[in-house]
Length: 172
Image (cartoon, rainbow, N blue to C red; front, side, top):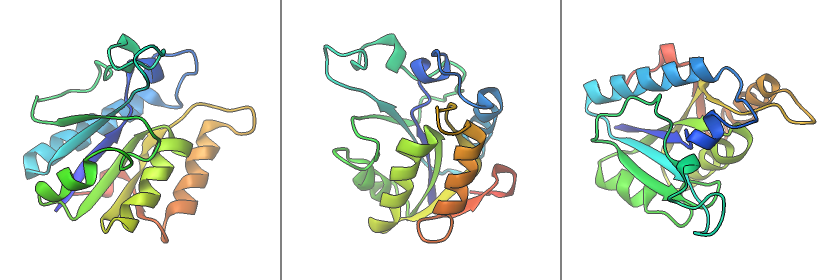
């Protein structure tokens, strides 16, 4: 069974000064994937990236809260992480296994940080990793436009680290 993992869809990233590429479409895609997972009985995990209590990324800072555009049922597992790799210093791997998941469908933000490192780690931990090609995003950087970062990571990660598939072609 596959679980859905949604990384860092937080107020500060969705509504911050660095606008994510095609964020509205991404939010629709994530909501559709969550609804599909619910119908299939697949577990849903949502990560919040947080930092120390006195930092701008403090767990109680409104900017670290999940974006209100996500349609939640209340049955999702929400967890905090402090590293790009969602498996480091969290109980994600144990929780996935406890829910019977042998695979993880990876989505969210930011492509070149948390999405990338989590995809790379999932297979090392024994999970079948699936990256939704149109289910992750980031913002433009000084070196590259976001659409190119997303395309590059879809191409680079496909094969050795995960399988890459469009949301419309995925079924839980």
